Length: 294
Image (cartoon, rainbow, N blue to C red; front, side, top):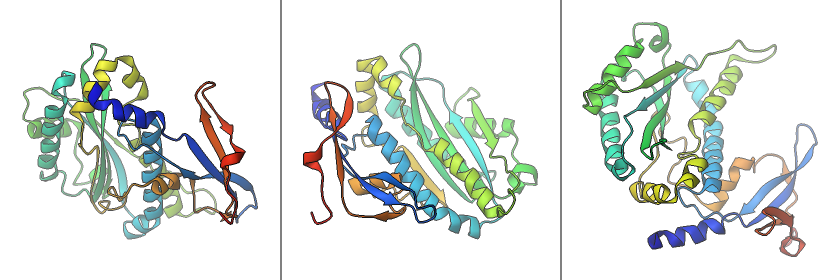
């Protein structure tokens, strides 16, 4: 465990000081506090950083959404979850490599070719016996024909495709679901209704890569998880959605944007809160405040 002590120290200080600013919303005149400054450890499995990273990616996707809906007005959206049998935690790295290779094969199959764009995340959960359960969550933007037309792929065929791409002798569990459209509300455009649906779908896809409860259930399991996933990408994108998340850009400022930093006016002042470990709560820290001129 000594090799990862520095990660523990970084995680312990993550988000220790937060600075908020007053933001006045142009539409309503409402004034509220928004996170403006913070220092994050950016350790992969840090729960705080996983949360902020998810918000950051969601914010970036939402910024691109109007263009995506305008360019692909008839597109529909699907969830595709791809699994494998549980593996020993010490074999997780090799299993993830095989899954990534299998996904590359899947993209080349004719059934997948109509997919216009996709976002794929990797999640690893802990089995009750201490095994690891890695799986892919994929959000796909597809033409209407993939849901009810000539390009439609039955669930049984998705299972068959994934089994062939994995090159295994068993039928892996596969879940495929359409993001159901809804009729626009009075005065709402179809594009707005679609955008709202996709926002929810993206939030569901870009969630924790490992649940915090699984991390604390068994310290040795968590340390081996850290070893097995070191320097591995857990998010991938392709097609028309390839660059929407800007996966290579991640600074403290980037991870603050999930708090709608661009929303409303900002007077420049900063109100500080510090984490107090003895009470496990944030407390006001006036000495760390900043004025507009600082």
